[in-house]
Amino acid sequence: MYLVFLSLAMEDKDYIESIKLIKQYLTGEGINISRFYLFGSRARGDNKPDSDYDILIVIDKDFKNGEKRKLLSNIYKFLIANNSNLNIDIVIKPKEFFEWESQNLGFLSYTVSNEGILV
Picture 1 (cartoon, rainbow, N blue to C red):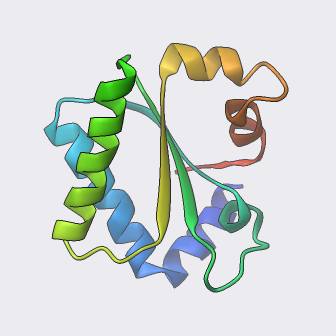
Picture 2: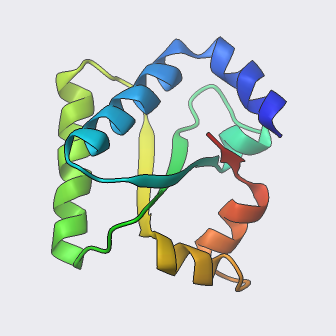
């Protein structure tokens, strides 16, 4: 699974740079990243050239819905300000929610923990 990520990452400098920027932003905001996953068609290897990148970030902090939306908005603004043109979807989950959902079929966290690539 890790080797798949390495071969993908070497092909796509924009992807690598966007991941670095997201991590930089969250760290700068004092948010501890527990896990960082690539999932969806890019992780499975059945993507098309115009497929987006699906990212799920597990953080140690819990947010109210409004705070999470603001955080996501700020991440996207940070990416744009740093010239990231990658088509990327970001999902943020608090660690306790992710861990519970990842044990229960039917939740996105379950699929990501079983099929996603840990970055």
